[in-house]
Length: 140
Image (cartoon, one colour):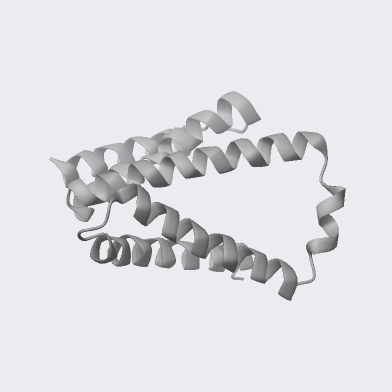
């Protein structure tokens, strides 16, 4: 049975791949910070459009203080990631930047163990090692 979250995860990967290619083409002769700002405005507009289409705006008042803090911190991390990513693809080859960027999978696994106390079993270790080795093979 195919799980719906897996479909969204695959779609996320496809859109992330398109993001890299489209951004590399669009960033030519454009300051990377300006390009990130333009992209962010589009993401904000699209996100709020989905909030109103799904009638989720009423939940805004139900967000706890803790959630506000962590959502804001997550937004700051996203912004920093995007700014660095756009600078990297402007300066380097997308085929080398993207694998390094995807090392976030390994970093996320480690942070999930440390902060969320999630399991880190032999399968996770092997996968993290393979991702790291694969990244090195692609980049070197």
